[in-house]
Length: 302
Image (cartoon, one colour):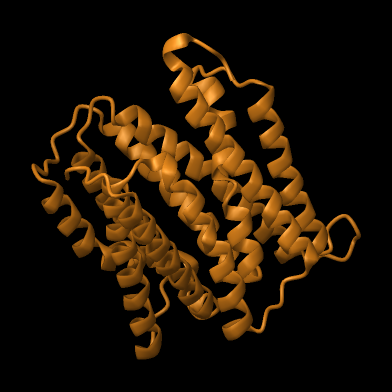
């Protein structure tokens, strides 16, 4: 897929993709108490498969041949674990809080890059990591943590939403290493097939037959997720990744609005403050990454 170098188009597509992903999250939250989240994961992957295949065919030269199958399996496992943490936390947490906590991915990616990629992280990025975790703690305090009043399921859901960031970061780093030798189409195909396969293995142990309303919502989850993935791919084909990161954080605003309208959730000051700290930390890490890229040839550390 050729890069179009259209920053405005890329920004609009990223905004649209973020909105659709957030709507998908709202649908997951809506049916989360009616069927197991693992079953939702399976249908999310299965019903999005036609869209994924359309993306692959458009990118050209699709192929399954690979010499790094173990790495693809590991990437699928980390991705499926991240999805499981996200989907479960959606079923127990207020929408805005859950969305904010899952934005910890850049923070964990910075930490994991040290042992896995041998990157040297300076005081600037370490400070940003610390700021991001302060944001997580602020949101936790707003839910009653550290005061003995928090519901155990809420506490577990918050832990899972935060751990999502860890496994999502690991998946991102694995893609970075795979892309050194594998075509992007090969990575996409294996991720889609393996995720559907992994969640399908667990299906017999958790199966609950959905009624027609839930089934339609499952179709919607797959469709919204698939279309959002197309838009995300097109966004990255239109502009530099580093220029689009900030737009993805509009998902928190969508989560606040949708949570208020459909679930009667009114986020408190702690949610907004914590979310702001997490987003600020992630944006600062993004800025440092851009500076590092510009200074790479001169060998300057950040």
